[in-house]
Image 1 (cartoon, rainbow, N blue to C red):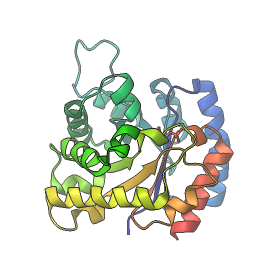
Image 2 (image 1 turned 120 degrees about the vertical axis):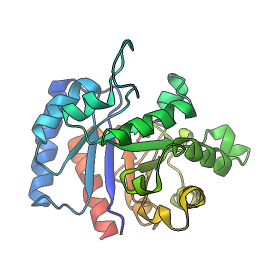
Image 3 (image 1 turned 45 degrees about the vertical axis):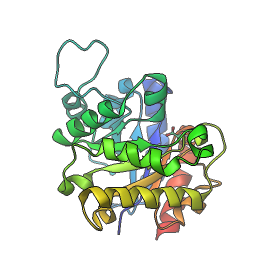
Image 4 (image 1 turned 135 degrees about the horizontal axis):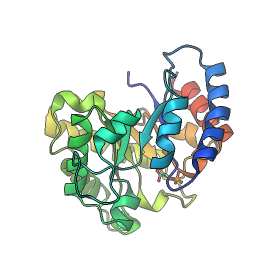
Length: 260
Ligand code: PGA
């Protein structure tokens, strides 16, 4: 069975001090509830770059993963303003979000950039969380499956079959991100089913059984259960509702209870 993953994408929120305060409150609730290293739910927190070292220090040796929200794929060099995979690895990151819709739409990230980043992440022992999702226009034109499949094909173009268990996909319909209008769980499961089919088409029958696919877009404690009840959905990538430690802990708790 695929282990559930609840991931926080803080976006451009929280100073390092605020990140540490979140870590203190969340850590206390989480360790009390789930004793030991082998927690039944994987937890990932992706702060802004500046918060990464502090959170990695606080969660060192604890069952809370820290990741970045982006990176560049080159090792080093004249790339002003960028962060490399080895810098993230050195800081203690284990995951990196790649191809988030805000990266694609606000910063012009392309499918080709995403595939380079996925390759670089895997080469450096970072697990990529690959985000894909259709716009409202795509959906209204009946292009959801086509658009998401094409994004998946591009993102996986440099991935090897044996690396699939180290990859995470987050299906995030663009129209559901930060809008309070979440997808219908059945619709999300349908798209995710098609994403798995696409991956199986690329790598062979049942490869996607080992691929964790999350849903993202206006997930909160009031709706996460309905997503986790879907067999296709292995967890959630959460923006707004991940900023409050109590709310984020609730998401982890509900995910655990639902998937148990
Ligand atoms: P949201 O963001 O939960 O605030 O909708 C999700 C995301 O962008 O990953």
